[in-house]
Length: 639
Image 1 (cartoon, rainbow, N blue to C red):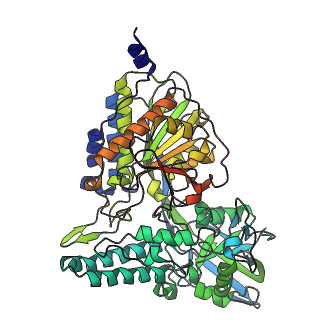
Image 2 (cartoon, rainbow, N blue to C red):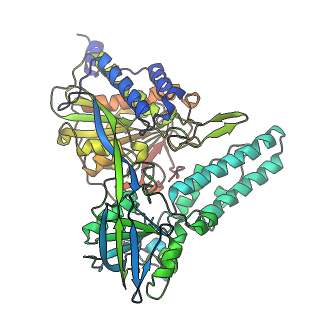
Image 3 (cartoon, rainbow, N blue to C red):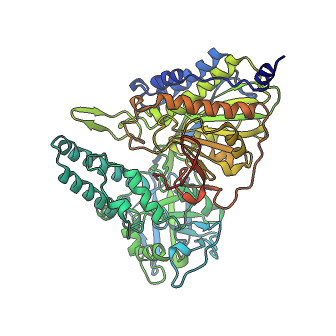
């Protein structure tokens, strides 16, 4: 054998991916016929799952060990309604005050039942500790708060907990996101004729106005002072409005504030935690500072019994398992009249907590009785798992969610109107038909290579991601195979719009072996941001929490995120192929036995709310298309 032949033999064969094949899969998944692949649209999510399963069957892949089918169902609690009998009575100054149906509602975060006891105010019902304590500054500020705990020192045994929804300085984030989308839509409607008329001065004025409107919208919750030219400068008056980029300026301004775990903010998590602490019942109140806009605050409307309350990833029609105690929600105006917290109304106490992040938890010296009656129902929905069997039981898992947000009638899609054309289907070409298609293409490439990998490769397609990572959570909690055999989990979410900002790869802090592997493979002619931390906002978070190394591939936020504009015509086919080849080579190395071990995350490299690049302090490096280092800066983010 000559030298050239020996060199060729020493180079491992890496299967090649087909970009056009991926695009064709995206076309099917993101067509109008799929109706936005909403998890709670039974026929459509089942059709998508069946199509994915059939693709794997045609390739000759198998169900994972321990399963008889590639489709693995899990049950969602989808509906809860109030029964006939509801009661809330507060004993105030020795007299019972009975509340009516217009003043409180039972909540699906609890169960049918009755409870009575002393009322204890527990603030937002949250606890938080900064990973690396900051030195306090003179006078103190929210930025130097290192610890917050509403339950510290409070005995809840046999008590009724009175608790605020959301978190300090945190609005109803779904309402905020909807209001921001409305700003963008109104801007575009006003800007379109001005662009045609080449009215540059009026366009500049319109850009400035919408920036001020955004400030007015978020001012109750974040510091909007000293935003600087990066926010106010209008570089191109004819450009579309990038609200995500503008919002990233606010995030940078408030990066040192306490950042509460997204899961802990939800009413379900709070109710379960309070029950575990001994509470026999919970009264929730959405304080006035948690509403978006004066109109909503003044209306003080009660949500539906099953409307998920709190948390930016509200489940939108899906309820988690209830806490084992009755739970109700009371209007804040009524709570102000009923309860005195250290001589102050609940709304004033909320404002005080938001101002200095100091808990005001207190037993109130009054008692309450509550009774709820609930009727609930559920729905079984699918995940899809297939495997390419390896020589050993060790598993490399690669995942992507295949659901999206449906239509404006069934789902949470906001319709958009372009001239006379109304689009009410959120097809989710990038989010996440792109990741789904890439998984299918990798399976094809690996199977047709005809090489049995050393480690088994599991291809995991999750539903319910858009409802709060529900499918991946259900899968890892009731896995048909031993999760202890998983050596690494690689997640693909929104990998279809490679653009000037390049590719982001997150989760590198979960193993010291990631960066050497990626350095060895190179950047494939792409600008790449290498992120140390792991985001809570996609499916790989569950594996990180089990101390399994994770990687997250992501091409960034864009103006069509969760909108009807996320269509196939915006997919970068060439970029899809380049990213797919990099991902393929990473997986192939791992499947071939490459060492990969968990590393305790260093400071800043743990799990958090931000997407890759949103916090420059957790970016390990950024390289340009030639592989040269470039200075990192904050990426646009959305909450």
